Amino acid sequence: MNNPVMQRQARRYEPYLDDPYRELNQALTGHLNRYGECLRGTKVLDFGCGERPFESFFSRFSAQTVACDLQQNRFGTVDVVLTREASKLPFESGTFDVVCLFDVLEHVEDDLALLAELRRILKDGGLLLLSVPFMYRFHEIPHDYRRYTPTGLKYVLAKCGFDVQEVQPMGSAIFVADTVLREQPRSFCHVGHVLLVAWR
Image 1 (cartoon, rainbow, N blue to C red):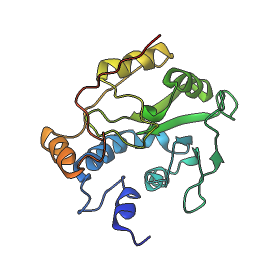
Image 2 (image 1 turned 180 degrees about the vertical axis):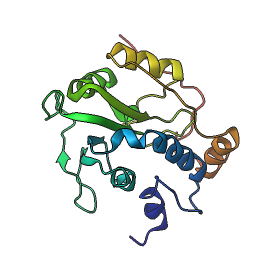
Image 3 (image 1 turned 90 degrees about the vertical axis):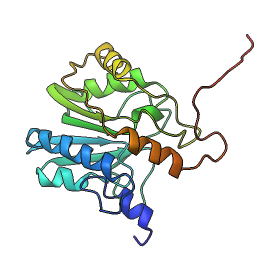
Image 4 (image 1 turned 30 degrees about the vertical axis):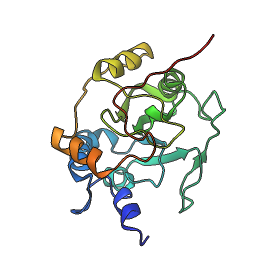
């Protein structure tokens, strides 16, 4: 993997020193490490795994990981390839001890349906570890559907039957400003507000 951008993306857990997202990924690494012992010896679903940038986190705590996504990655390490049209995940109820969902929920058309499915496949007392962007550019177009406030995120999780234990902000105002300035807009990539007019 010679592409430095791809190398940095593959190391979101314990990021490289030159990672422009280092502040964010270091904060995420710190939060994940606090829950690491909860993963020890468990069965984990890495939902929306992409290039599996958190695999060293799962390995560190000896978790048995099932990685799933909508497409196979460059290394052929996605265990379960899903279809966007599927309304039900191909796992039995109560299969997993832990479900991880890192920067995925904003790309899901029906977030409530997915969260309900994730709750179904979690064991009773199972753990959901989730991260989402808030102040971030319009990305992975056209499948970028929403941004969550902490209140909104707690609302949708509670509505789907989760007992939210902790919501932690990550990334300082300086980090957010730097990211917005560095990732210059390419046709509607950064938006403050959107006006939409639709006819019935």
